Length: 306
Image (cartoon, rainbow, N blue to C red):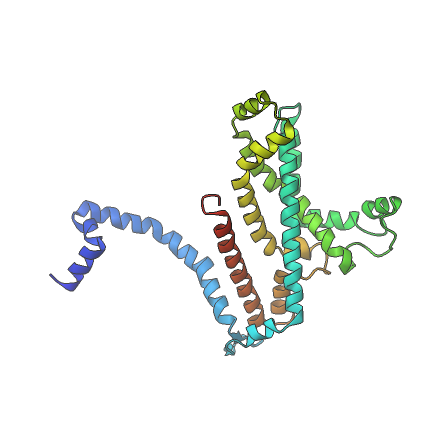
């Protein structure tokens, strides 16, 4: 027996080549999968590999010149940069704040909608508007509402005695980050709302009826029935929202320029300062941090929950 035959036998490939029908079926499967593989390779895998290469180089402004290999110099420059760590801390605060706020708000609204009432379908459609409206439209509307000159929100806060400055909430670094967190939570809570509402409607009503017979009120029912049933959904919402908020660019960039997160830092470095190698290094660090977060999250909550 030849080496090729032994290898085919050991790997089990020979079972697909026993008859012309099996051979045709195998070739058909390869032909059906190949376009997807080529598309993924050209659109996703190639840019990732090329980005890894650029992160170890210094890219010249002249496109005719070849990037210069600098090794770990870009990463060492980032790790010793105060601006990088400032952007990292801001990204963590923004991600944690917006994820927690959108999750809690989505759960609260889902609990309100987990009952029959008149106009329920219309109300659900209105709840989804923040998430489906184009980001550029809602960002400009929020900028208008937060304007210190004619904005409704600063005027209302001033009447309550909570706001007296003539400087806009989006132009001060101390107030820009909390404002962006509130905006992100408002825009993205419908995603959590949909998942929570779907899971709430799947909980058997008999569980609540049994709890009522035992004398349990709304709070014990929520603590002992609703919350345990929602643990898996909460884990999924927190995981997905954390990944998306960590990569958030448009909702921060369109609303204010006073909040520096890692995606914005990477954009400014690569396309404003024309340091594309350094920008590629930032984006690769973003990928590594998120990969570590996902692995840690799945390990903490368990694969069956996520």
